Image (cartoon, rainbow, N blue to C red; front, side):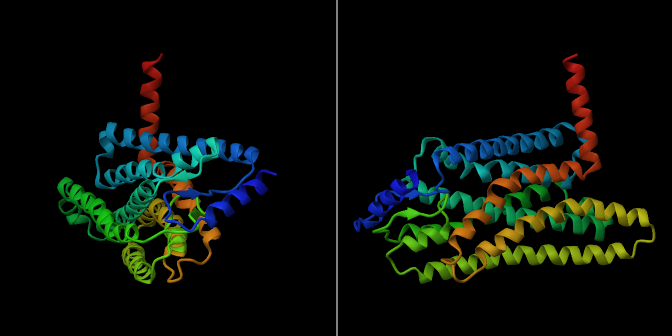
Length: 324
């Protein structure tokens, strides 16, 4: 009965041909009971994600042994993974709890800009992390000089700057589109493809712009990462000691696993010229980079890194002794 009423309400909203004064995020269109269980699940994942990423930052900040470029970048990734889901998940939780679907155009465009800016920033940051591993393994004698603290800060700042700049122009173009008639966004956040589908303006130029930007950022960064790891593997194969090979692969495995999870979803979602296809599938797959990956990343880096695990044990021991 609830679903039937919801469909009728959406049809009424779609029948209005005036200029849209607000959008409606459909989310997952669940019954009230199912929505509550989904709320609990996503809420737990979100809280664990924020806690885990804050914990990684605290561990790296408080242990002098982790004052290295690699851990500085891991801490930067954890900081980014705090903000990336925060743009979309709290709004989704509120919609599931209060059954509130409406969002203003200004709020929608703001969410769009920050969500994709953080996503683009993560692309650049993962590339910087790959270059860091490339320099550490393929050019160890000059690594400390090249990856100085100033260089790390400069590369990190560049990742954030380029991440926001590359999304700014497409975001501005989207705000210029007219949205009239159906204002139902079949998603849990303001994604590009559903917005384009609702526009009654000519959108081909915006679609081409976003497609080119996506190819430049996603495929460009992914290509640099793959090339870095090809050189890393070639260099590692020349190591005479098997211990050196295993240690190198162990060091790079965490970052490579994060890259595979992140790019497997983003390439499918955004590197397609037909943005209006597979909207529902996009909505389901977007859960991975937006909700699940921010929780997986700190776990992967913690469980697969010996120095981080030692720092965690040291911090836990200090915490235990302090409360003893």
